[in-house]
Length: 440
Ligand code: GLU
Figure 1: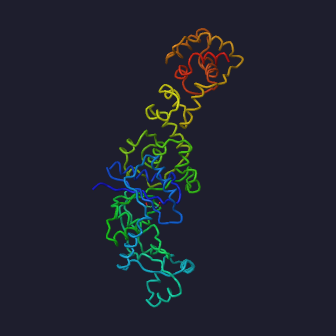
Figure 2 (figure 1 turned 90 degrees about the horizontal axis):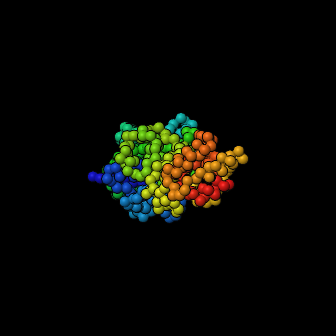
């Protein structure tokens, strides 16, 4: 059976680099295994979820090159969750509780003071039918807890290895709130069963959820998927990224002008045994993908590393892959300037140096030298050899060599002390402009 993966964001905000990493790992797994990829919006929180955020996430994924085979919304599936809740009630695995948040908090404090684990004491299970009716007559509405089996739940995590969690140490989780709305836990399991999800790759903040959810899968008679919980991203300083997530949203990385494949390469290779290097497209990442390469240690995300990777990617992009984005300039221009780009928009800067007005920089002590060089400019047409031939002639005529020969020419021709190889740039600048610039 072909694997079925899913990425399940809550559309209560945009996705950031950490979420994108989860999406990309699921996507890579699905492509590697000829499986399929479900985008599932976890939008049961009707107040905080918006269509704008959902559309934004779809755009972000599309930019990252992820094309879901199926898209689902939890908000359209409440009847399925209701049916599952009824099934759990009938099996005595879902029970009504009437405690207010205040009461629960007081109980928790008492437990802590007695050095007991702050686990829900299941007091509601002992309520008689009359007591329940009395509470409801007071206007209290129940929330519903899943009755854990109090056993050791085991699974072999595809990243973390054998896991066992004793659910005796956990509070029975609330699945349905007082107002009848669902928390994430149950809908996720119902969907994973209904959509035939075979592998769940997600952050390790969900490891404990996995134990609870495995019990729910079993209580509903569903097939338990394979789980793979990856470590979370930290900043370069080792701290969590949470405070900076706004600036690390996929939307802001895109607006900053980063290449999608730089973000993808970074997210896919971070925290793996492979070196982080730029990949031009998904092919290499899919071929090399293996969950076993993921480390359990937190993966350090460093903006500067991402920016460096972006530059390295641009430096190797062939003309064909940027042609449609280049407003001006042909292949020769691209090959000349790509090695000097940090972000793609830098092409405009080099375009201006080639074709626009520049202010030549000619130091007083170089004036005579530049005059001689100008008089020796070869005639058109100019080719890739022009620079070499010209500078050799200038060298013999002036006796200058090395930096003393090349830097004044660069400063006069481009107004800058750095930039693309002049052998490539000079034919693009052309004889007329070059002569003008050398004239100051
Ligand atoms: N909506 C959940 C989250 O974003 C999904 C967790 C899961 O993959 O099961 O954390």
